Image 1 (cartoon, rainbow, N blue to C red):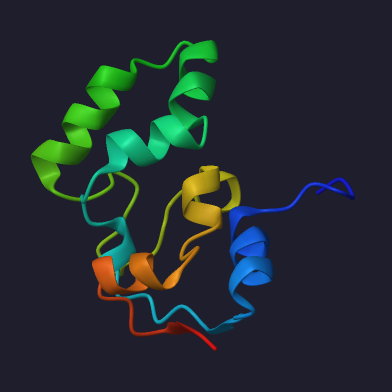
Image 2 (image 1 turned 120 degrees about the horizontal axis):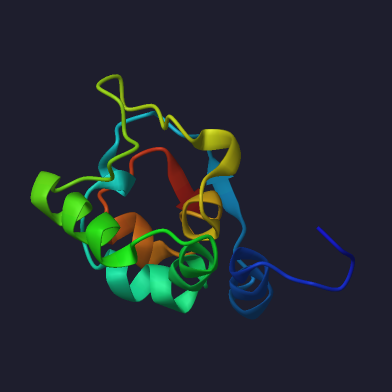
Length: 109
């Protein structure tokens, strides 16, 4: 990442004085549908998908119909991990997201 550009996680850490600790336990809770449309709109994922010609409505409907991300495998691993969206790369960005998704692997201290 270019110098001078902060992730949301870094900005929150600077504001709160808390740092993220822990590791992913591969529970898959973060990939369950909560309010992805707003999350994906706010981080630019849907705009990027539109540029690539991907039908974003079909993507969101597929996620909603299955109540989880279409890329989450049965073993709770992401099948597009190396190229996952920014929203996924930065998860969890704050304590609220940890609580919202019942994430047991991460904390902010």
